[in-house]
Length: 395
Image 1: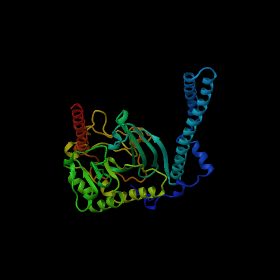
Image 2 (image 1 turned 135 degrees about the horizontal axis):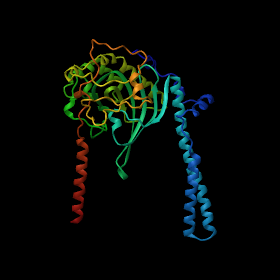
Image 3 (image 1 turned 45 degrees about the vertical axis):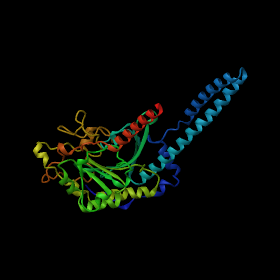
Image 4 (image 1 turned 180 degrees about the vertical axis):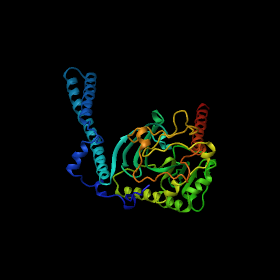
């Protein structure tokens, strides 16, 4: 695939992230479907009704007659002003950020998508409920790249927790084994910060200082393939540019994960993300030449590859990625499966029959998941502590 020079050049017009936007561009953005909707009036009416009802009830309890009417009017006005003002402030902040990101995307040849709920095939997108992508920007030509923030919810009631992440997705011209790089620098006291844990038997130790920065997981039997992909020069680039990020290679996509929002209005953040992509893509040709000889033993050419769409994993009934596995692309990027199957990115190389078919044998498509023993230990200690406290109270 023809290399996109924008990543080496860096983002253009970073002043659009923080500076004023022209009235013409602001008016143009308001007409787009990605522009936030102002519901301050609707929320104000809701506050008016709720405040009026609360005032009427309170006035009726504390006094009689006209006092109840006065309380209703006062509480209704206060409710309308408070709720309407809060709604307006939230809308204003959301609109301001979306406008600046849209203008920045427009100046850099990107598409501002905003918010969506499509399911991707990375491990981050297979956890919890209430999953939503926000502040999404994508390339519109050459190699598909997507920047976005993401959140999901776990637990319920008082234990409910919302998790916030940022991600960068980069498409490859080849399907690769499922490999995860767990960055050591962002782990906590109890180990990995990743939402999914993998069987430690799949951990592979690499040479040099790489193990100080990343723990690498690859499917059993694919150790030699991982060494082919992660040559010393590739490892150095990951250490120098992406040591703060967890990385997942799955099917024909590479995801870079961060435990904080990546899509922000900070110019330095965008300059760093561009450098991460550029550093990675300068060595990606070797990855796109990789082929899995095990496919010949299985008598299959492997799953098909679709251009421009982060897949959502195996088809229903085949969660392990076994025989019959095929990335389910759906309409995650706003296209149908048929359209995606026939889409060819600008500058794509023709197939090379001498390299063999693209794809990954069934044993390499998904890592085996493991148990987070640190969490199990915490729960066990909490249960034992509760039992001890109950016993002490009784005696």
